[in-house]
Image (cartoon, rainbow, N blue to C red):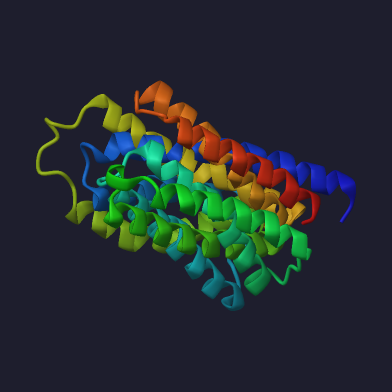
Length: 288
C-alpha cells in the first residue's frame, strides 16, 4: 500500500469520525421526543431511500452471493444494532456520558479487523489500544450515581456490534466501494425497517418539536449515510485497525457538541479521560 493511499485513508477516516461525532448528541435530542424504535427505523428508511436511489441511478452491479452474508452483518451491526442500542441507552444516560464509551470502539474494530479482515497489528499497538479502552471503562465504573447500569450495558453492547459492522464493511469496501457497501446494507434492511417505522410511528406529532426532527435528519443523512462513505473508504485504504483508532478522538468532539448544543455538563474527569485517550490514539497509530 503506497503512502498516498494511506494518507488519503487517514483523511477520509478523520472526516467520517467528525461526522459521527454528532451522532450521539443528535440521537439524544431526537430520542427525548421520539420512540427509539421509530428513530432507529426511520433513520434507516430515509438513508436507505437515498442509497437505493444512487445505486439505481448509477447502475451499480448487484453484490454476489458470497458478499450478501457480509452485507447482512453490516446491516445488523451499523444499520440496526448500533443505532437502536444507543437510542435505548440515551434514554438512561446523557450524550456526554455516552460519547466516552466511543473510546472503546477502536479496540472493538481492531479485534474484528484481525478476526474478519486478516490484519496483524504489532503487539505495542494492542498496548495503546487496550490502555485507551481501560481508561474509558474506568471512567464508566467510577461515575457512581451519575451512571445507569442499563445505559452503560446497552452502550457496551452497541460498541461490540458496531465494531463488527465496521470491520466487515471495511473488508467489503475493498471489493464493492465504500458508499456502495452502506447503500446495499441499507437497501437489504429497507423492507424490515420500513415496516418497523410504520408500526412505531407516533400517534401524535403535536409533542414532537423541530429539534427532534433536525436530530432525525442528521442521524439519517450524515450518521447513516454520508459519514460511512468517508469512514469505510478510510478503513479500506488506511487499514481497519490503524484508521479505526481515530475514533478515540470522537469523544473529544462529542463532548464539545454535548456541551455547546445540549448544555450538558462536561466534567473535568470527562475531559481528562478524553485527553488521555487521545494520547493513546497516537501511540496506536505509530505501531499499527
